[in-house]
Image 1 (cartoon, one colour):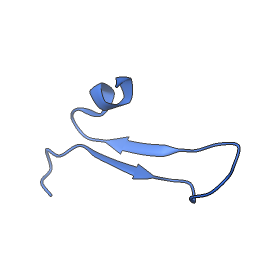
Image 2 (image 1 turned 45 degrees about the horizontal axis):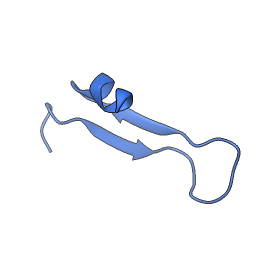
Image 3 (image 1 turned 90 degrees about the vertical axis):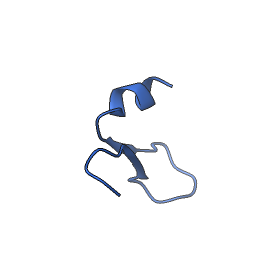
Image 4 (image 1 turned 135 degrees about the vertical axis):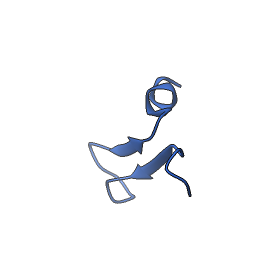
Length: 35
């Protein structure tokens, strides 16, 4: 992994729930979030 990579990570535990949160970081984070 380099400093230029864009990464996505699940921030909430898997399973049923009312909210699911993904963390997105990197230069293309905005582009990934809009897809």
